[in-house]
Image (cartoon, rainbow, N blue to C red):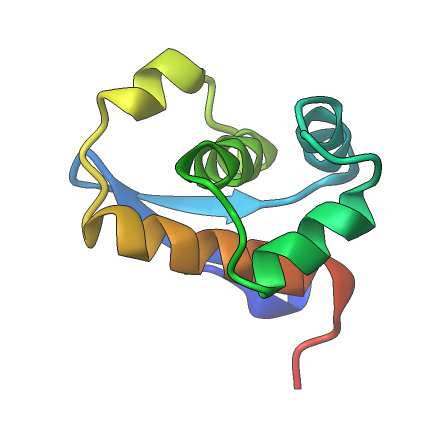
Length: 104
């Protein structure tokens, strides 16, 4: 079960439930691949709904890796995500929110 107090979010990938988390290492990896100057600018863009499918992939892969997944970008491109792209975008938003706020 994903623990929101630890910044975790769940996602079903290829019929396997995974726990995603944006650890410091995952955030550093995410920031290195961004098309913005800062992670804050990326979060603002994501919150405004001005993100691309590539942005969603970056966030999901970073979260999966932070949760211990050993896959890569090529693996996620061919993976079946339960709920599809909309669920992936929702999980990405939840990951970003949980990485920078305390759940209520």
